[in-house]
Image (cartoon, rainbow, N blue to C red; front, side):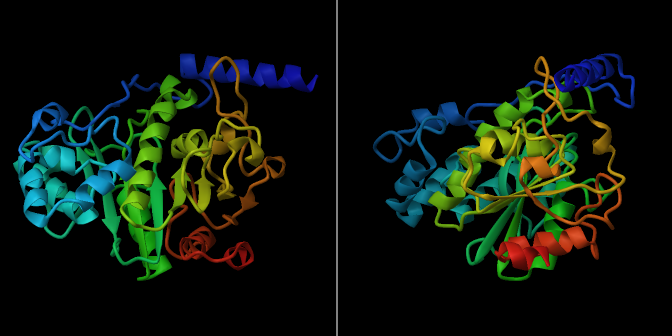
Length: 352
């Protein structure tokens, strides 16, 4: 009977997504952006330094880091000027070089969607203008931070919408900025809109197709931080971003996985994630995500609600959080606990 009920709920989910009923709205199907950074063909053909450069697609972040460690500053600057789009997105390259490379790429862009990203003082760690655009921005001093956090957003996020003013604490820079302010100077937080997200709440949001592509990009990005000598991050995953984190979990280097407003992680429980990270979950009382069936059937749905006690995650209080985008709002209990996790507090200390 229980299995039958879950099947009926899953069929209802499929129907609601396809027809747009039951509170779901239509969304445009998206093509996931994968593969190496723009400009990789010219990078591969470059023999200026007397040999092949590390392949942007096949070289590991550790191999990239070792390559740059063997270069002098003149050689690094030469590659930066010749290939800013590759250097700026090359996981394992020194972050200082990536900042400068992305500043050059943004200065050269004539796309009005990215104009605000080129403002002086912004620390853009990744920028890919193709398609809807992807971007990662750092808040705090990443090189000297004792603790690093990474914010993975959900649907309707890309480089073009990154700086939107609506729902400031729900947009990637707003989440990262408020978390950094709450966690303190010894921390740094990265807002990572580095994968193709669903648009609207349609088929893309109900399946794992885009999340699977995003998981690989997230894993490589985090590996690049570590290869560059930075601390293993705590990863905060909002909404569909938690699906990405769930699929990446078994290979993602992380101290903590924190999911908020999650439709599921495509796993039945914490053990199924196969991660050594601490797993946390939060859901606001009036978050609309609670209306999404916690099932997986015929490729639709993302499975068990991570705040369900049976899932086994550590529960983060969110009784004063409002809606789906309010988890990082200043003064909320959820942000207080997030900040404790970002500072590396023990489980007991973070939950107090």
